[in-house]
Length: 79
Figure 1 (cartoon, rainbow, N blue to C red):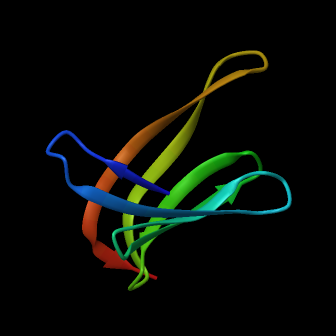
Figure 2: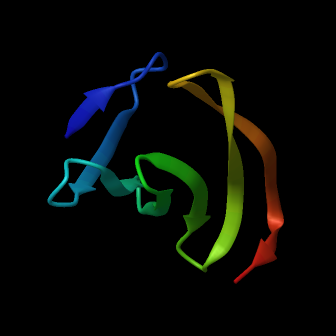
């Protein structure tokens, strides 16, 4: 996908989804972000070097109602 952002710069994006329709990675202008799931919820994002860039926690609001919160966004941890 190509589009112009607010500064009229062409950006290149590629998305990959698994068989369940969940996004497993995105590449934006050559930078990869991979997504890790626990069931239906995204729990982490990694960059192309395997470094954790974001971690999420699933919080139960009430019976059968859940919300995912960003609990940490960093560039210093790796697998």
